[in-house]
Image (cartoon, rainbow, N blue to C red; front, side):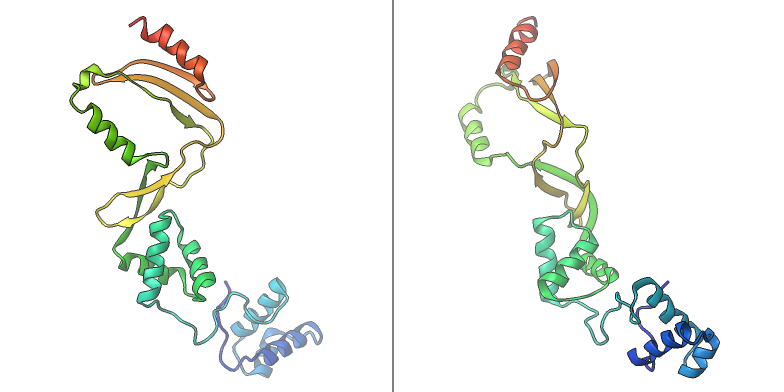
Length: 226
């Protein structure tokens, strides 16, 4: 495991000397530690980093004096990101902070920040992207006086055996996590049900989409026989 920072006296010049003493002069770690006035563990870390990355400084170390906490504006930024896309992972939030605001903090800091916003990680409840609340309200106003048992609803539904969507996201404590998304992905298997207030009275399943011909055949062959 690599340490994020070396001891204060191990300057870049000293680390380069360590690599030179080891590779060119063949000195042991204990000899190098004595020459550099540092521990053998520090020598091991420097040589390991040079072997793995070809440099003498840890490329993943955060700069000294960098920010280690988030302020209110940062928390608001995280909140807005999760409001737009509740399925973001913590490392993606970390990348967004780095690219969008130039802030470099650890995953642990981001995890604490998210929980300080009273958000919890939970299973997503998806809402259809095609839903139109205005049309729904108009329909209710037009036909609300008709008894429910008079209706037979026909509508295509679909499932996808190759859908690769995230199933968990962030939402306020006590509230469902809802993400608007298009449900259709990959190879579709369509379901055409006839639904009444008593439940489904007829059902047909197709591979692919339901077209006009399949819909009319369903009406003639399945519903007429009921």
